[in-house]
Amino acid sequence: MSLVLLCLCIILSGCSQSGDGANPPPVVPSTEQPIERYTGEPSEQISYVYTTMRELSLTFNGLAERDELMPLLDALDRYKVKATFFVPGIRAAEEPDLVHEIAARGHQIENNALDGTDLTELQYNQIYHQLRLTNEILERETTVKPKYIRTRSGSFSDDVRLAAAHLGMEAVITYSINLQSWNGDAASKVEDYVMTNITRGGIIALNTENNPDLLKSLEMVITSVQKVGYSLVPLNRLLEYKHERKPLEQIDGYDAAKINPDYGNAEYEVIYKADRNDKQIALTFDDWGTDYTVTRLLDLLKEENIKASFFLRGNGPERNPNLARAIAEDGHDVANHTYSHPVITNLSPEEIQEEVVKAHQVITEAIQQKPVMMFRPPTGAFDEETAKIVAATGYRTIAMYDVTTLDWDRSNDADHIVKTIMENTESGSVILLHILDGLHTLEALPTAIQKLRDQGYTFVKMSELVDLQS
Image (cartoon, rainbow, N blue to C red):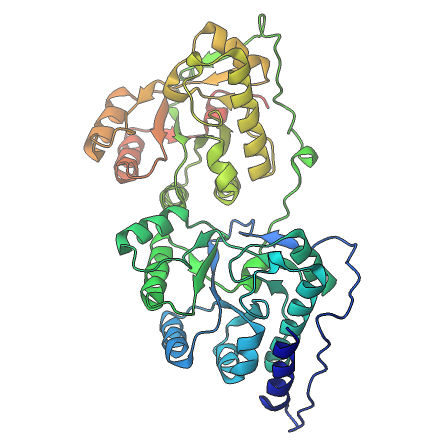
């Protein structure tokens, strides 16, 4: 390491000029210089940003050679995309003109450690000096002090987070979509992966070095993001819109659902439809889907000025809390559909309550508020005992439906869905639909909504339809 640092001293002393022509060489202490371990809070680790903004970040690791980097920067210019580049300190010292070019194009530059060494295998002292020296190099070339660190592999340790905090850095960045290892995989396979994993607040990682598929990857990523209806921004922009995320125990209503083995006399109400004649009805959506599907549905409902009710499978918001919060922010009911979508009549009482309570907690933390206290059993299967078991947790309203379109079956096309809705809907109806990917539901909804309105129906949330008291 001492030889590397000596080389960097030589490189830094002659590689760049300050505004007045002076070029003092930096002072580079040896990595063997003792550093006392930081005892404060470690830097945050971020793999995605908790936000409902329709944005995510495109990030690059490494610093490619000029003949590879320039076409990448030109392509980003054509697409009008600003990205974040995590640059290794040694490469920045070797080719500062490339760092200048990245910055001149309006991209963000952050710390990719000194070289390709796995920081998790180094001692604290060595990690600190690697990050410190890289910060100095990048600040020297860009005049901006790096705030974030990502190791080449994305792996990190507690010592990496501590050293970053020691240096005043805000976060250790990983990713939610990792395309660094894509090398010759079928484009359709990679596109499916990207489309499935694109989320609001997501962080996409690509490798600039020795990546013959880099431009192809870039085009695929940008096309996919645009298809979902989102945009790509640098990390600093994405983090500007980071929502506060309280711990579960600090959210009102987090304990509204609890494990309760004493369910024998629990009271419950099963609602299939509302008893009313004012032609109010409710659209309800079960399960979970990707940002591509759910965002299109949210846009449609907003365009139609309709508030609906969403019964979410908890392991969906667990993976993608941003999307769940977006549903809640749009003013829709968010309710409980178990955690993993089992048929509850096949479970023990303990398993049923664990499914309900876990879903409640996950959804509460995702949307940062208590869900609407309605429960819908997966597949609609329940009996008196399971209803009591669920009610004992705190979910006393079993929210069913009287109009089911079987839209979950992909063989049922849009015409079938519309026909079923129109033939079965009446005042107080609760219409069951799904937000799974690849269904014909989104295709059917505009027609169904228009036809229902033509017959005088109006749409409200199920909680309002049945006058549910919170």
